[in-house]
Length: 219
Image 1 (cartoon, rainbow, N blue to C red):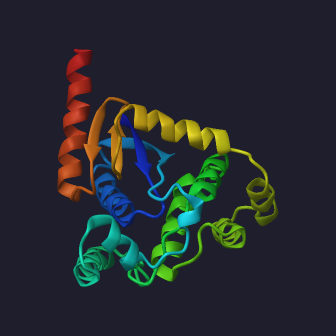
Image 2: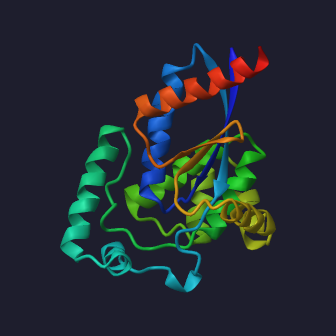
């Protein structure tokens, strides 16, 4: 069985990142008899300015893309339907507010120490897209950590410190240097890039192609 590493560059505030991972999970399920997977999450901030925290999302998207609020609402509604078909809670997609995610990324780094990086990421996705939780707020982040069985006291200690701050900044700088300008981005075996929230069948094909390249190179 072939071992495959997948580095995922994403932001907690990116709905396509949540959708993209849900699709990747379906692809990995289809390939579980052929491959084993090592998933690592990496930081990317759509809203790196803490001062931009709290703006209604439709208003923010309308200004960013130069489209009307009604048009952005239709686009978000379509995205919501896609997410619901994948079993994701996107109930607050259109009611949410822009959030800075730097501390949330620090929490994901910390969760990796406990083998719960993916669980942490998924808990943050649901808090934000499902409930419009203020994922820049320490109490909310501690609650997310507690919800997946991590020590709430340790999580709070982490968040009031500067621990993992430099690691998150270094992570973000690395991907910018490699011209990763949009997310989600999936890097397979540290050499093959898959951009965007691709459908499961596309991911299955891409993963098989990458494994075949490795096996061919070993001959």
